Amino acid sequence: MDISEKAAYVKGLFDGMELDMNDRQNKVLKALIDLVNEMAEEVEQLNQSYDDVCDQIDAIDEDLSNIEDFLNDEEEEDDEYCDCGFCGGNEDTAYEVTCPTCGTTIGLDEDSLNEGSMRCPQCDELLEFDYNEDEADEKAASEE
Image 1 (tube, one colour):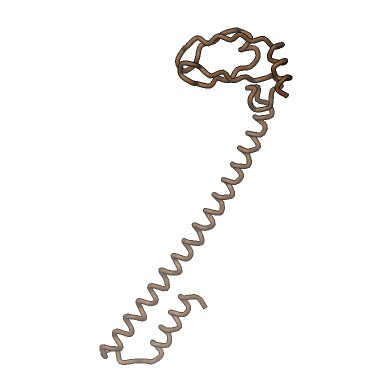
Image 2 (cartoon, helix red, strand yellow):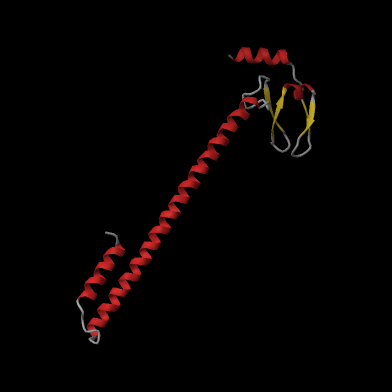
């Protein structure tokens, strides 16, 4: 039995007693029973609204989970095919250069490094590179 049914049962008991409604105590009891009925209706409406909101939140949560799965799958695919040199998707060796003027770290591939120079994207400082692939291979081998 839910709260509305209980309130209706109490109202039925009261109505069945056939009390004198000119008595002040009976008027108070009637007013209290009416109040309980109204409160029971409000509680039922609140419970229904609560259930509706919970259903909507569950649907949003499921949609969000699907979006997260989609984005995570897309990021993994992007990493596999990325050619920036840092993600592991490209076999080319990647290098990092730090600008001595502003401290910005810049990622370079071997082709950019072989050009010999570039401008810092942050402060426009001319950065020059003196890169020899054979020396770099020898240095890497000696460090192992």
